[in-house]
Image 1 (tube, rainbow, N blue to C red):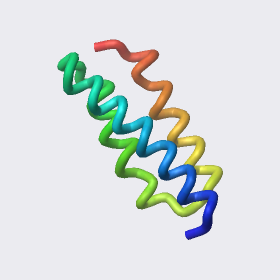
Image 2 (image 1 turned 180 degrees about the horizontal axis):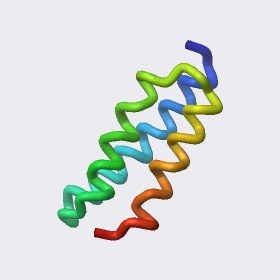
Image 3 (image 1 turned 45 degrees about the vertical axis):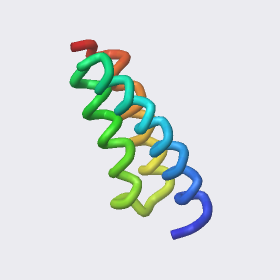
Image 4 (image 1 turned 60 degrees about the vertical axis):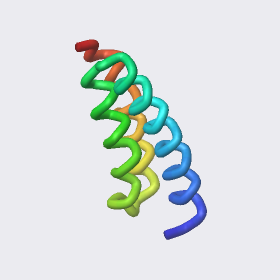
Length: 67
């Protein structure tokens, strides 16, 4: 694990916590699930490019799927 992956994990975890909090308060399923995924997935991805790609996709997902 290097510094870049730690910082990306911190960034995605913080955004994920915000999504989780919003989804819980608004009872919205998509932001809630994306928030949990954003907080958990950096632990399992070692490649920085893949980390950024998956994180960006999870951040954009609630914008396109509003349930």
